[in-house]
Every structure is written in C-alpha cells, then in structure tokens.
Image 1 (cartoon, rainbow, N blue to C red):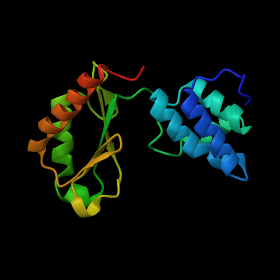
Image 2: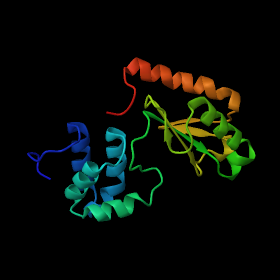
Image 3: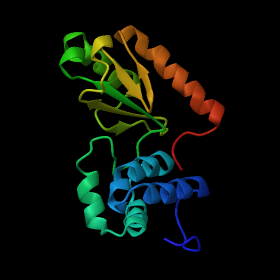
Image 4: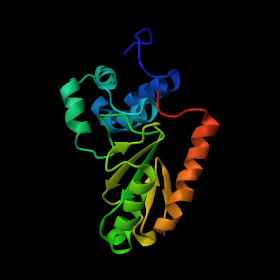
Length: 173
C-alpha cells in the first residue's frame, strides 16, 4: 500500500503495519499482529479493516476472514471500551469463575458477548487466559485481575467507569 493511498488507520498504526510487513519474509505472517493492532484502534474487525489489511499484505478479504475467525480474541462486532473476559476454564471454574461471571452479568445487565447500552463495557466468557495459578481470573482489555471473588466485581467496574469518564468517552468511535 503506498503512502498516498487512503487508510482508515491512524498514521501511527499505519506505520506499525508497514514495519510489520517489512519484518517478515512472507507478508502474510504479519496478518494476526496487524489484526490485533487494527482491533485495538477501531474496536473490531469491520469490513473496512479487513479490506485494508488484505490490500496491505496482498491476500484476499476471504483469506483474512478465514484466519480471523479462528482466533477467539478477534471480534467482528463492536465491543465495549472495556472488554471484560471472565475465564471459566478448569482452574478458574473450580475456584468460582461461574459465580464471578454471574456477578458481572448482574452488575452490567448483559450476558455473554453483550455490550452495555452506554458502550463502556462488554462481557464474555472465555477459555484459559493463562492465569491458572491465580484463579479465578479475568482480563479487562490487557489488564489482568486475579484471585477474585464476586464481591470484588463492583469495585473493578467502578475503576473502569472512572477511566472512561476521565477519558471523556463512552465507547469506541
């Protein structure tokens, strides 16, 4: 993609994409990292994101979608500004993950893959997030919270509501 070509990404992310494509001997190897960076910036993998990424690495949009659908951390619909992922894999499940997930559902008023009406939170039940020793655990965007109890849920949500308010945003643009 030439520098004169229009892109939906910020100059910083576009430059990161250009560096990734140069880093790998086969451009396609940059696909997953590019999709993660794109999702961080746009909020999800929209049709425009998929088209832009496909063009940058010289593959079809279908090939991008085929790879993206394999990875559960990639989304095709907008999520909240703060995506709460509650691990319910075996270690977390045995230490109360479902009680934790139920409390998040009650507090947020949404279920699995739901987004709060204000766009601040989305919630999903996920498989292992790699924090088995500290179960039960959640991940909010890239922040981990571990050794949790359902009683800690309101304080966690209040922290992120405060961040959303301080940033002056309710959701991804």
